[in-house]
Length: 296
Image 1 (cartoon, one colour):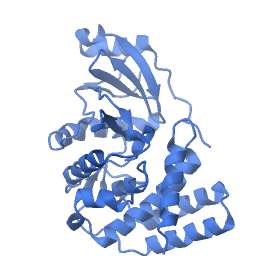
Image 2: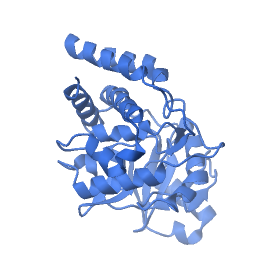
Image 3: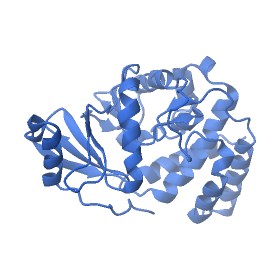
Image 4: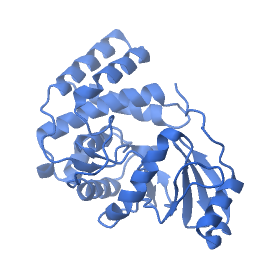
């Protein structure tokens, strides 16, 4: 399984303090701790209530610009905390990209829970209702998310082949994928999407949804992309529980069927690129198992 790629630049606490000092001397004096990194960003906790998020690869640099431009407005209309930038940092001290200071959102990923509570399900449904609104013409687009399903056929089938599943399971998933690609595509105005919505990016605290994080893939397009999370949530519930929480009248049957197709494609991707340490592989396995269990 793949690991996050090497960083294009080393980001030290000293460098982060220098960058902060250029923007706000008071912020640069707060305690600063390295929290971790993902494929695209390094994260440092700043004091008790803030975090610093910096691209670690050139490919991620444009994504921060999208977050800085669009997340503050989205934060005003969603009821769940999101890391909307409150300081938009500039390149300096040899660091070549824009970066952000964002709110620190407490909680643990629901991926670490044995099950998804009904309350969390309801709150996630409300968040998706609030987020999935028509996006403006200049909203970001993403060549991998929010697109017609058949555009992902090459990568989905390649990743499926490399998983080396049993012949029976492989054939069933290929048939289900072909069926999903024949569903009518999204024909309405593109909607706002999180773009990378899975249980590692959904936080819970004291049994309640406390935040949605990692909007680097924020984009516009088919809401079915985000709805695929229904197949990845911990627990033994049916994916339709999330559809009910959002409101069945808001999601037509074709959109829900495409969401299952997205769950298949993303599930294969998570299994291929994920690892046991991050939990992404287990999320992918859960999605594929639910899809197979629901097979007619």
